[in-house]
Each structure stands twice: as structure tokens, then as C-alpha cells.
Length: 445
Image (tube, rainbow, N blue to C red; front, side, top):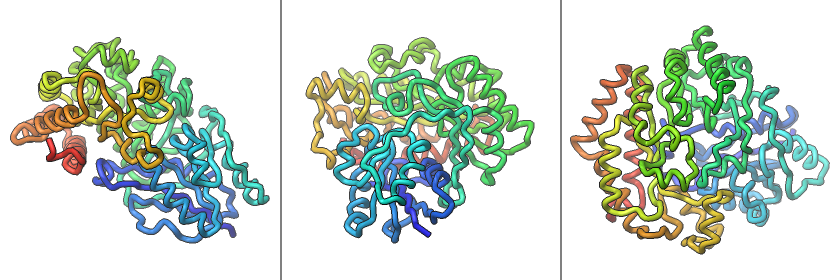
């Protein structure tokens, strides 16, 4: 029986990987395992927990983001030196396959479902190709179930994906290029069937946007929430969604009744001009001045809000950071994610900064280690990287200092009126605080 090792690499145990509540199972590998013929023995080796990822195998498959790609190349080197072929997939390899092919035997570009069976067939026939292209999957008729039995048991959240693709095409995001502009979604009945079979209580919907973008998408989300309620699934869950989901209070009420604990929303900035440069049209349409009302609408139903923001844009300043700190401190947002603007491969932002010769770290692949949202890897205009690090520290000190941090948590408890949801919000706040204190710039500014 041939053996397949599927590996989830961890390049650096920092940031959210330092806390159990913010780690997520490698769902993509579980799907690849499900696509592998039954006469293969499959093992998922997960560096979030496993310390040994070099066990014997006939074939190795690895997925990777940009920030951990050098760990992937190290793993691949170890296996290839022993004559074991390595196949690499994921968003980084899909964006720059030519680089990846210098370090692995085979690259799968795009989605794996249509490509992986051919990879296995060619390997068994002794004719493994250098590159395979996976086309976009029709999610309407998608019936593949991930091999959850192979995932590590210490994950809190059971990951579920119900859709792929995003039409918004923000300039800093590569999702549209990787998964396409069309919002492809599974039928609500199929999603409910999968949810009912999951033994774990805690669910992470890893869609880029579970609610979607139009009336048909919202109707599907409504069916999922109503189905979870009618089926008495007793799940606790969270989702990513865009800010427009906050306009539909009836849908929010259903989400809460079905077990929604918190939502992740990309708010990005308080500056409309920066939103325009990001092409964040949906946020502009609703208006920064309405952020507070959107957040409070979720909170009225006991749902916490994780607001994601980006620093490191052109022409920021000390006065801007002071104003931003006041804006965040006075907002009702429960959990804050503040990252630094990072031009990833395949994004319009990367292409623009390369054309303007503003990339500071471009000794690839070595410098990919810095592309993890806590380094300034490009030269901003009108502000220095050191000033941005200092501004980032200044804002986070305001958010996590005594007694404001404790008051902020108390306000969340009062607003949510839901102890389990508050506890998750508290643990996520602690995870972000811990990640900040482990950052390379903490204590330097």
C-alpha cells in the first residue's frame, strides 16, 4: 500500500499561532486526502502540533502561504534528498509556480479537486508532471467530504468551507486571482448535511464571505441558519463577512439563534481616501461613520465583532496614529486585528509597488519570511517604516493598557449579554495581545 504524507508547515511560531483558540486545521489537506484513492495510506502531519514531519512516504504533498514558504522548501529538500517526490500546492505556489518548481518536483496551480486525481494517476504510472492546473470547481454540485479523521484532535474549531471566490478584488488581496471573481457556493442542504455529521461543537466557516453579496446569497445563508436551528445542531460558530451583512438585522438575528459567536469584518481603515486606494467599495458605500452602527447591530444579538484594520499606508503620520487610536478606543468593536500592509504575490498592490521600485525586501525566497503582516517590506510615501512601527505600538498600547483594556472587556460583556461569546472574545483579545508582545518591533518603539 503506497503512503502519502500531507504536511501543514509552520515557519515561525508567532502571532496567532501562539494561541490555541486562533489556530485552524488545514482543511485543504483534508480535502486532498479525501480525493486520494482508498488503496493509499494517508497521513496528515501538522506542524502546529507535530514535531516530526519527515516520516517515510512514497509521495509528499504540502500546502503553503507566502510567510511559511521557506519552511516548505526545507521540508521538500529533506524528502527529495531521500528520493521521495514532493508536490506543492496552495496560494503562494499558484501565484509564482516558477519559483516553487526550483524547490519541489511538482506544483499544482489553483484548486486541487480536478488536478489531484491526475497527479496520483501519473505518479502511479511513473510519469509525474512538473505542473498541473486545477480549474475552478462547481460548488453547487460539490459533494466531497474532507477527511476530518486525519486532522489533529487538539483544534478547537472544525473548519467548514461553503463557498469560494470574491468579486470585490481589493488591491491588497490575492483571493480573486486565486479563486476567481465569481462567488461560487454550495447548496444550503449540502452544507447542513456536512454540519450535522461533524462531532465537534465549534465551527469556523472559513469562507472569505459566508453571507455573500446579493439577495440569492443571503437567502442561502438564511437557509443554513434556519436549518441549524431546526436541526437543533447546538453548534457554536464564527464567520468572515463583509460590512454589508450588518444591514440585515433579520439575518443577524437568525445567525445568533443558530449559534454565531463572533464575526470577522475587514473594516481596514477610518480614512475614506485609503479605502478608495484599496478598492474597498462596499465600505465606502456604507461609510466609515456607520461602522459603529453596524457593530452595535451585531452586538444587540450577542454577536461579538472582530474588526480587522491595516496600518502602513502612504502618508500616515504621528497625528494620524493618535487620531486612529482615539477612533478605535471610542468604537464599540470587541476584538481588534491590526496588521501592516503587505504586498503579497499575485496582488495588484505587489505589482504596483514593484513597478514603482518600492519593495524593500526582495531577496527571494529568503525574504518571504518577512511577508507575514508584521514587517514593512515596502517603502511607503510620506512616512518611514520606523514611524509605522512606532505608530502600531502606540495604538496597541492604548488598546491593551491598564485600565482601558479591562474597561473595554467589561463593555463587551455588558453589550453582548452572553457569557460564552464574551469568553471567546476575551480569549481572542488575549491571543492578539500575546502576538503583539511577541512581535519584532515590540519594546523597540
